[in-house]
Image: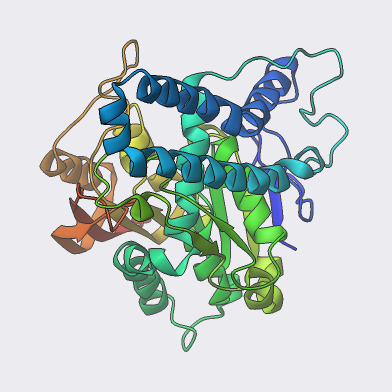
Length: 383
């Protein structure tokens, strides 16, 4: 079983097998945890409201137009069945969610806490989480993983070759690990790897796939069912995928002791300097309000001579959110910051074509021209 725990603001917390330890032990965290679970549970009911409106609009049309849209009406009924299937899977995902937390002060909601109605944004995060299963744990996501994860894995293997070191002695950190596939792949090569994730949505889903899936293609879902636009056929919207494409428990068994997941804010929970041999980031560094904070932190926690491997664009997630502080330097400036902080660039590629959670059948396709670089923390010269 995978070890999943939370690191608070101390880097030497004990590890608890197959459990998550909470970042904060207060009522606010309990309410947040309950809110996330409520969002998962409200997935179907939230979408049902939309379906009701669609049916009412359809029935308000002239009879002639309704007849012309007969196929559309039939597809709406099928879409509802797909959503129900997804909800059944979600119920399994959250079934034992409160047992993710082993310590006595875990943020498990008390009986007196009122179950708040989840926001539209929270339910949309559930939908995003479902799509993440495609990228990380389905055969349909293999192309994205080959483009985004494999270059990072190749650099880990190249720079920490099993022929010249003991992989289990190499400490690799993967911040923003999502559903954990990149960290899983690195750990399966024998390295001591820890994935770090802040989102409870992702943590709950990753705990399910890494701890509850003991055979290939054990479960199925409809990831694109919420995508009502740019569908060439109704079948594209209702495409089913199965997961996981590999058996996590089988592949990790020899090296399970070297794979952990840590819950919490990357900037807050990693406080020990020179702890890691390698930090691997994929579609992560643009998730900061201040990208320089991330670069500083990566430099701080790397051992002298340690490696930072990065791949991704600069979307700057907070740039258009009202009330959020955000700086958005161009890559050339980011590169200057990386050098100024104390890294030397060893490898760099630009215009690397990548996608993220892309529906291959959609009439609309997004593509990033990502940057990929490998840089090393410059050791301080001893005088």
